[in-house]
Image (cartoon, rainbow, N blue to C red; front, side, top):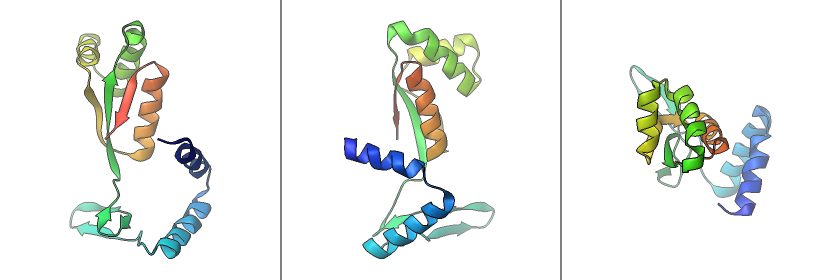
Length: 128
């Protein structure tokens, strides 16, 4: 991700809900997109999707543990245990079998939080 993109992302994180709502309206007007598209299926909660053209933007992410440096293995193992609830042996096997999905189909905020925790422990993590 470019420095410019990272700066914009950091600025977006600091917006209030009202500011975010205003930003979405401005983006819709400026770029001619519709952020109000929803899919309704009986028995399934409504999950809004932002649509640009014909392509919906991704709203759920898988957090993937990509690499575990040998000198950071224990710290990463502790974080994995906290996130997954795995027992020590299972968590050890999990960490040693990277790349591995830590959490599936989580919202962006939760995915970013999990990614930060793992990266703080020394892991290489991606969101897919």
